[in-house]
Length: 188
Image (cartoon, rainbow, N blue to C red):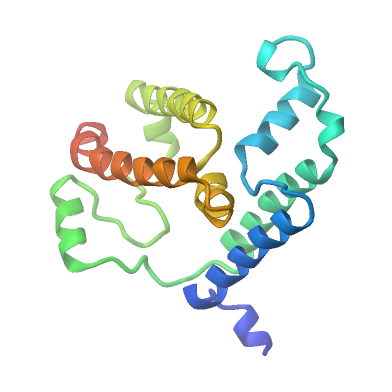
């Protein structure tokens, strides 16, 4: 049993668990399962009164939001560091060939080292990617009324049509970005 807990769990175990968490949150008081609203609460607690978007009584929402974000960080550390999968990312040979044509050849970690290193991040292109991407993600989550996890897990579990449209848009934008933007962003 312990060896099962120390290996990456298969999708057919983790998927239903995430779904049950979303349904449980809806059952105990319609608490949305998403990260962007929780990060908004942290900003409202940290920078009160400076930005209009953060001027609200975050305490009235309950402390579970802050516990949720702490759990995300702790879970990410447990899964990414303590229970890290030593095997390379399982991607198809066709995807490896397509990425190799763009200059990405290291598939040993979760993300390609050609894109995610300090050298790349501290370049002009890297800073533009991080700042521009961060702005677009922040704007998009605010405009869409939530993030991918909120719409994809809670919104779909709650049968919200807006969440279905948002999830379809997320996937379409991701596919378009991988086809049109990735070749422009890969350092050569």
